[in-house]
Image 1: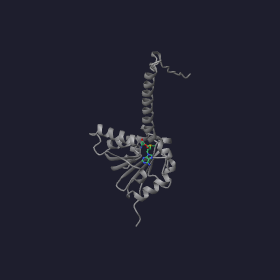
Image 2: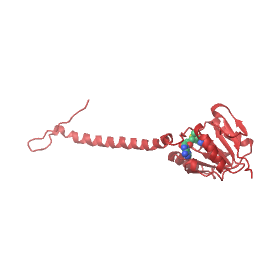
Image 3: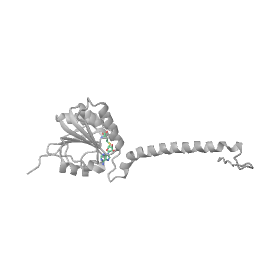
Image 4: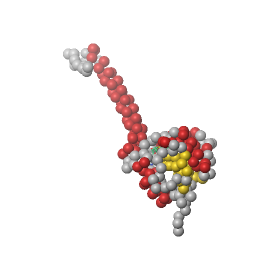
Length: 211
Ligand SMILES: C[S@@+](CC[C@H](N)C(=O)[O-])C[C@H]1O[C@@H](n2cnc3c(N)ncnc32)[C@H](O)[C@@H]1O
């Protein structure tokens, strides 16, 4: 129920004592509105980074890889004795990149979400002795050049795999290995498949160019 304060003035035009509390209440109210407004704005700014993928041409939401998926990625790479530069496309909180550092790759992550990149960079800095070659880039994966990489990891969505496959063929060097998690590349034959169900990963090799 709404409460109304009616200010009455005495003969000299001053506020009567019983109404003097209304001024301090409205100041408290203004502070509360300011604080809650600030919190709401802050939350909206943070959430916007996580919701914005839904409005992009390809919606690739933040779904971190499970322990089993991470394990399958590195088991797949291990079977082919892979090493060298590795990029995780859409690196989230950096878990695949940090795991790659443990397996002696030179791992990079590219990620659009400001907060996830900041979190990954902070984690890398706090644990820099274990991650000397780790790097994170806040970029759009579709515009990120892949020519330098020996290994590419993608935990994608089905709608993007066809277009991604074209980018991989255009940019990756011969012999580069691709690990796709959860959704396979539609036009390539995997060298090996590891795991099952949602944890399945497929390992592909970019063939030598036919001259
Ligand atoms: C399915 S999650 C995978 C996260 C991480 N690779 C993992 O396995 O835990 C996909 C990530 O891609 C990011 N992403 C979506 N669109 C992107 C884009 N165009 N460029 C770079 N990153 C993008 C999302 O913010 C999200 O963190």
